[in-house]
Each structure stands twice: as structure tokens, then as C-alpha cells.
Length: 456
Image 1: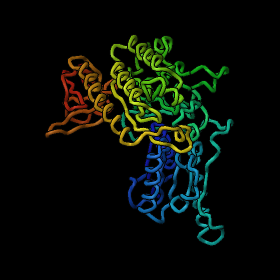
Image 2: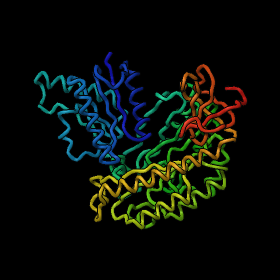
Image 3: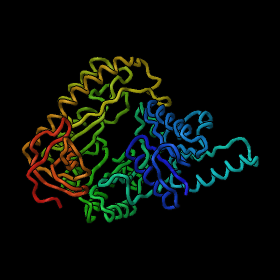
Image 4: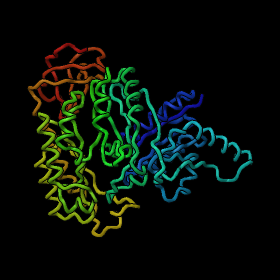
């Protein structure tokens, strides 16, 4: 029985695909082991969203080769899909698995092992590695059918429903790494959600590269999202208690869309709407397809249908040409919208994108200072958002135990994705409790008391 070690980098889509590859190998009798010395096969599911992600991917590939020079090293995903000089990786990688080829991981490993054996016996050329990358940007590329029935997370499961992106933001390589929008069939999604529910998962997180585009390739007009009908179908599955949406395009938040999802009580009031900049001039250079006014309207619509929804976002600081005045517009917009959480990224030049060749690239010191300002603002906004819930009733999905100062607590998330604990002995994971939030347990964790009803 060969031992396989996985290391995942990047987004929720990558996490899902790693789980799926792991299950394919387990079904064939492979043993999954930690990413440490002693494995026979190392699989790194890489990321390429920034140059930093590229570097981390290379580091993990080199680490795998170092841990066992005789192991089979597999690099999958976005970094190897977009690498311009793949031949430079040959000393470190035996098998390259591009996007849309992960479903073939078992047969590819076996083919690579045969190739290596032939090379060792002198029956093949010196090119020992096997490259399984297709042209992901061809129009005929179909959705890759991967499936899971369980994940490494005990209570929450990511469910991939969509791949690819047609937006082509000027800083982003992902459309070239993932190809055009492709949607998973509704029947397959529902079957997977039912399997997960049967295996005890209470919460599913629908994820994709551009989730808001789900179904546009299935619709004859090419414009209609089928996300609402899918949500309605998942909502009816017994055992699924919570549904989250990983990330949404601001323009999908209309009155009709929000009215529909607000009527589905299992859909959590937790919405990630990527902003990237609070300045229209910067958004235009980024090739983002909305204005700050449209973004603000989306937030207002959400708040008109939900009492206190958790709205989170991403912001890039130091984008090429961002002036101090433009940055201050972002600061004021973040104050105005009052996000629950703001994920801040310093602009990282990504070769192969339009932004990489733009004029007026900013120094790292400017990017760092602007990030610092937004991080301080995020800290204030995030605490204010949590403070709102003190004294209010909440529902907590327990995920794990937390031991602090000799006491046992149950740690989980509210529907708004706020961490909270309640003091209770034993293992209560994957149960739902209701109670009153009494205050802060720690800076980023609330405390729940007065449980009603008892943990189910």
C-alpha cells in the first residue's frame, strides 16, 4: 500500500479538488499520510493567484523532493497550468496535472510510474516526467466531474459548483489558469449534498472560481444565473442546516435575488462581496465591472432584507497608479460601508497580466503603509460588528473543543460566521446550540451562555 501525502495551497476550490483527489486515491487503496518525510507520493495542489503564491508553490515542490528524493512528486493546479517555463521544474517534478485533469489522478500516477520505470531500465528517453496539461482556454473544455462524500473538516463541507472566469480583471491570471465559465449540473450538485448530509455534514459552502456565473453557460441566453433554483433545491435536503455562498459578484445582489435568498432560512446572512478598491478610477484600471455606487447599493439591499448581515470583502492596496487621493477614497468607503471583515492584500505584480506592464508601479513601502492603515480600520470595524451581538440570542454550530485555563469549551461559528464558545464538557462537535452572547471570550471570539434548547 503506497503512502500519499497532500499539500493544498490557495482557495476553497483548490481545497475541494484536493479532497476529491484524495478520495479517488483512497478508493484505489492508497494510504493518505501527513505531508512529512516517509511518503511514496507527494501531491502539491498549487496556486498562482499572485507571484507570492507561485513562490510558495515552488517551495512546497522543492520541499517534497527534499523529504524523499526517491518519491513520486506530483504538482497539480494553477501554478503548473500557467508556468511559462515548465521545463525548469523537471528536476523536481515527475508528474504535472493541469486543471481539468485532476479527475484522472489515479491513471496519471500509474502512467507516470510506468514511464519512470522504463527510463530507469533504459527503455525510454531522458525526459522522465509526464505532463498532463491541456489547453484550458479552449471553448470545448467541459466541467471537470469531481466528487466528494466527506472532507477533512468535521462539520462544514465545500461543494464546488462552478469553474472558470470570464471577467479578466487586469491584475488576475486566474482566467488563464482556469479557463472560461463552466457549471456543474444541478443533479450532480444535489446528489453530492445528499451524500454529505447522509454522512453527517450540517453545513455546505457553495464555491467556484466565479460563483455568480453559475449556470450562465447552461442558459440559452448566456446571461441568466441559475444560482437561485439551485439554492432552493439544496434548501430542501434533509440534514443540511446551513448553506453558505463563498464569494459573490456585487452586481448579482439585486432586489429580486436578495428577496429570493432571504426567504431561504438555511442560507446564512454572511456575504463575501469582493470590492478591491473604493475608488472608481482605480476600479476602472482594474477592469472591475461595477462602480462604488453600485457596490454600496448592493450592501444596502442586503441590509434591507437582513437585520445585521455579515458583509466581508477583499481590497488590494497599491495598485498601479493608485494615488494618495484614490487610496483615501477607499479608506472613506470602507468606513462608510462598515464591513464585518476586510481582507487586505498588497498588490503583487503577476506576470502575464495587463497590470504587470502598467505605468506607475508603486514601491513596497507605500503598499505596506496603506495596508497598515486598512488593517487598523478592519480591526475596529470587526470588533464593532461583533459587539452588536452582545446580549442577543444566537445559534452556534459546534466544530471542536477548546481547552483554556483548565476549562473545556465548545468552539463554533454563528450563522454570521463569528467564532464563539460555550462552556460545556464532552464532545459536542457537529451539534447546534442556541444561547445568548454574553461578551468577548477573546478578541476575535465571543462567549455564549444560557443554552436553549439543550445541545441537539
